[in-house]
Image: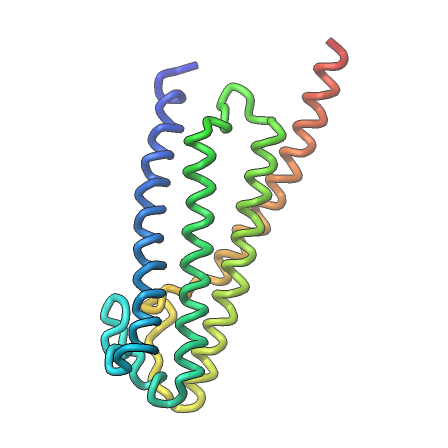
Length: 182
């Protein structure tokens, strides 16, 4: 195996750690800001996480504010869980470049697929809530600013990962048959 092939998992692990830490920071910031704005200082909704102004939503209806911030929290927590599993996969050294068609690899790909589906669904719910609030003439920041955009991309990732999971399943079956013939 070449040196570049050996370094690829380590590079991916470092990248996964960086993304995991960033997404955890976003998730924690959104949760803490939600709690603070709801229970301590409602004026804080004007300076929400990453300087997002949700004061119009809060002033319109606190239930809408709680709904949108809860969906934001769920989406970001699910992203953190996804990257946690990626980091864990590398930490446990379960991913082997020399033996890609292992049952654990298929299992991880399936986990990633369903986490992607969950992120897509909650992102879609959140973006639909934002669209509804905009139709009510409430000034809502963009879904990108709220970190809930990209539901279509998460749906696409889900379908791609499901297809890859099925390919790995077939690869495992073929490898098992090959091992039995030898």
